Length: 91
Length: 432
Image (cartoon, rainbow over all chains, first blue to last red; front, side):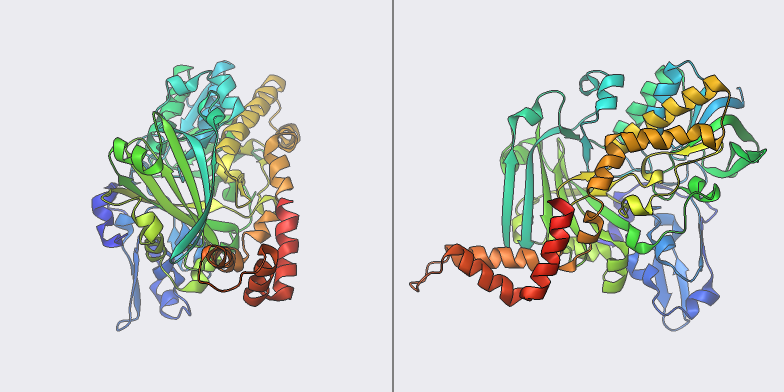
């Protein structure tokens, strides 16, 4: 499973309003950043140089794994507005 | 449009739609809020819709009309190591006779169909509506607000069928914060293959389907993998405990590759075209991590109520969800007749759950939650089993041992007496 192909496989209705906001200050000092590896859609990236965590909410599968795994309270995570976000066709 | 309802249901999944169907048939004014563009747009599962008596009762012969893929008549349990596999196959002709024991379905299709049955009976379905918060009146829940929209929906009773993450249960103060150990993350890749190829590879005819559960292909993580056949596609995926995933430092899609690259699996999926990738959390904490399921003006059903269990052999959730939805609806009907929506009145929902197979099964297998967290179950035991069988089958002109002696020697070498006794107790208490 090449997760890079995700946008070609799964359909998304992207909202201009993000439904995930990370607190970059908290994430800078996080000792595990488990969100980066746990996210099944590879939405999180940590830049070692700038020490900044970024999230690509556009391909979020809305599973909530990051929200549960983050024990630093650094994620403001909610469901997208109605009609937006992932839109499974088959599955 | 009436903005006041007898019952507001958050989530048009299996629990919500069954509740809506029951309530609409009772002549009540019921509204379902669905955050997806259509029911099922946000939902995924491994793939198996289990036989559910309340579904058969409320929609007799539903299989003639519902969008189903295949009737699963073949169940396989496979213990895998990187280069070998031991499997137990159970094929039962009765499973392909009505009422079918289980069938594979696509959730966007099935959930839309089920919600449509409720709509036909008079339920109102509002898609593109994410419930945001609860409205309270005189200390009881009396409605919900919708994200990003002005206005609100009010009603006598709210049924939260909003899935595993249930923000409604959280806002009602019914559940504690999630712990990674109580949840599994499921990921799945849907692979397209021609119908004839699937029939040949899995030895199936007509509408027959196969369900394969794998142990040992999760990179040492606590959990298991699965393969289900659909009509013209196969669903391959895995479920691993979130805390185990976090501790491993592995990415779930890389772990899935281990299954896809396994020589035994690779030949089953050869030439298949990836069609869709999906992920979802699963409440796997068992009965101990269930939230409270009712409060004044509200009941919680399905995944939102943590109604799901696995004992390594049975993996059930959708049938528990649909049944709980109907029990919540029955409770709502009684409450509306009595004009009483208090926690005391709605506590009969909990009694109904306790008296049903849902809580009985979750209690029966309450120790399985701990067993499923045995790391040796997904790594050492598959290896032990294949090592024993390799010695049993290998022919090399050296004297053989009897089976029990061989098994004992291998088990002591791999796990040790202490480990065997402790695992034996755990597995025994879970399943025997």
